[in-house]
Image (cartoon, helix red, strand yellow):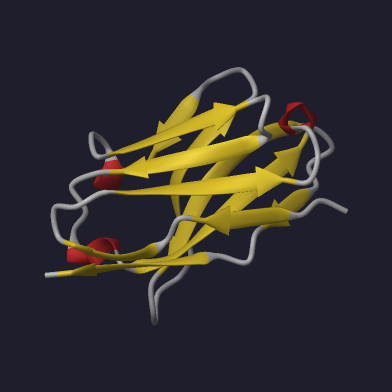
Length: 116
């Protein structure tokens, strides 16, 4: 069983920055892809950014140019640097990992609140 633990959420003013981090309980080399999703109240969970083991990244249009996903192979972490935050970025952010066998894992989520 894989555990993903997120941290770094909080309350920030519009235009500010936050850095989310997700620590995996095993080597991230075992994952085909890792990423971040978010879910706002009353809305479906949506993709924010993903990064494959090969280094390919994919960003939702609404975060392009503002968010950056990265990974640290030594610390078994994947991070999401969020800049120029907007009130509409307010959501619970979830870390996701998919193994090469297509097993899908989720973290418990971290709340991000952006005030106007």
